[in-house]
Image (cartoon, rainbow, N blue to C red; front, side):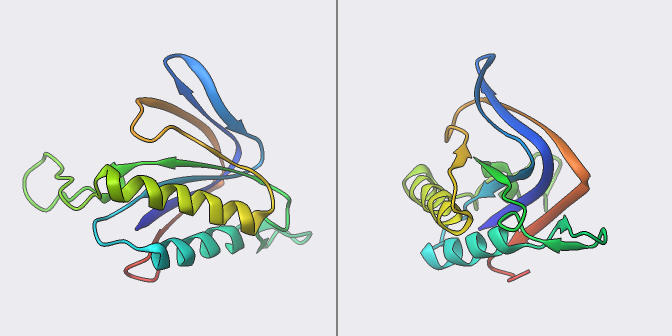
Length: 150
């Protein structure tokens, strides 16, 4: 399982030209589920995302988590995070999990982050054609992979 965490001033998801969900200061998390991922991957990544110290403290040092700053979270499923670009110029998504695996793990990830953060995690719609907008604050973007544990 792979996530991309972005520190944002705001972020939103629109579907069919209509706003579906949005957040203010906090995190925008893109979530890619790979075949073979389990709830242990979810647990590790949810804890990592919720506790990642990427918000400034009073000295301007990234030393606070989204929990510490009472920030909001928007999590969007994105199978393209698992693209393989090893051969040719057309990405392969052979390692991305199918709906039967990916949907429950994405939902569980959102639930666990919500429990850690103590507030609703806003979401996109799994499999929908979404338009995602954000203002990346910093910019701060962190990629975390549960298989690599980094």
